[in-house]
Length: 262
Ligand code: GLP
Image (cartoon, rainbow, N blue to C red):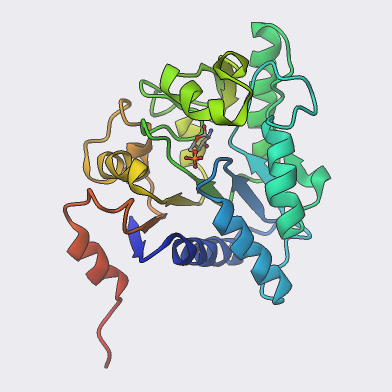
């Protein structure tokens, strides 16, 4: 793992954007595939990618976007459904074509239809040639996507129940807790692990415990983000507040400084 700690959220976002662009630059022969997380954590990263586009250093015209997850049961077009969120916060910002945005179909009704939607999503990712770079945030309880504590480390896209903590955390986007969906479709941890590069962004002291557990704790389904330790190309971009619980901080800073001159 590469652990990059920056003084503030803006610099964190810039470094995460560089990790995304360098990961996409060395991709397979097909169109690039960028995995997209929702939440507040990656917003600065998406804006930094937008600035790279404006400066002529990046172009997402042929890129496919693949969402990590989607709520189950929201009416199509609901402003807090992740399709709408990603259209607003990513497509419009980096110039990703809406028709190239893939989101699990959370409007499917009933468990058989949702299982079929999950299988179709896995098939679509495979058809695109897999995800080149997956952007990730981390839940305060250590979740990745909507893989709540207890998620199998090898899990695939499936229906998950949202934890009470996650529903409370996300209630700010809805009129009240009762309006937050109880279930979601999420890429599994095994699905996420197949992306060629993972770029996790976390800022603020509310994430410090989850970050420390994910990076320096044991690999365990109880902290789904600890699965990052299993991936050979993970870049973790943190600000000082989110890095506050790390014990091996000096080593990460030394490593990030690179090889000595000469
Ligand atoms: C949401 C998303 C995750 C996201 C997380 C953290 O519920 N499903 O993909 O990483 O919660 O969100 P935030 O970045 O707003 O703290």
